[in-house]
Image (cartoon, rainbow, N blue to C red; front, side):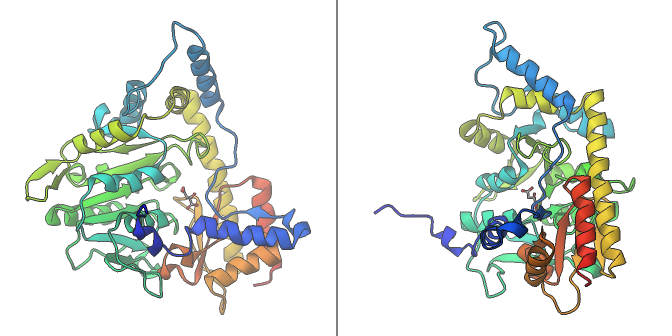
Length: 412
Ligand code: MLT
């Protein structure tokens, strides 16, 4: 009989969002009338239409594919040069960060890339993750066999958990111990916290001193409003020798359904072979992409490129302003209710302390059953998330205003 990957059996009941989906389905089946009023502020999924600049570029690209003279088949596995250049110039070189076009690898998502990156990293790494954390970092390490079993709190043997609490502003302290891989996500999902330049510089210093690699997820960088918060880890000198950066068009360009993202792998970033020699990661990631991926479709890459046009930039700014306006409304509503509120300033997530005597899933159930609003329980992101819930600001303005009213009517 064919053997399965037993590591999958170590995974807890389910990835957080499918588990939320299961509970919401049970609710809609048992209360069909209330379900008609349901507002979803759980998963951070965009709601506003795709920018016009993107649609026009995609239409044009499709027309090109419809003509013999301009038809294209397979594209470069790393992404088309036009998009790699637009990204490197607009996201990096315009900020005086020396990233070359061929250090950009276009992909279909940062979720996929953070998981796939483990393909080129060996076994035996000591892996640090924050708690709470975006669950994909943990689950993909479980799947590939980098952990033991989970304990009763859901913490996996073999991972180093870095607690993020209100006391450290949800940016973890530098560990005392030696780790080889560190997952950092700033602006943070789920807490909405931003890391300062000093905090990132301390992590870069640690990584260089320990020859560790930082896997830096900056999927929410477009939502930064504070001018002192770095948009890229490469704003910290030396980060190119110790960090990979993941970025996405999902949230700023409304691409969650369209799918386009990119990963930056600097050529000077090194890892170590089993025999102790230094080896650049760039050719390994390139090899991985050439073998397992055919990049993103041509119309989608043209659409992503259009986000960097004058019109595209203005439309992205409007989308960001819309979602951050929602974040402010949600944040103010929770503050008026006397709840402790974090995030929502440099990120489209509000991280809220549960009212006295209610735990995270209790709050999820209360919001679902009494307010008909889906939120995300903090504990789904790790045990340090217990006592919190996350509200996503990705929604229409009308829905957000209604959520604020319904929360206030709960009389917490
Ligand atoms: C979230 O809600 O945490 C995100 O939407 C998940 C994701 O981007 O994959």
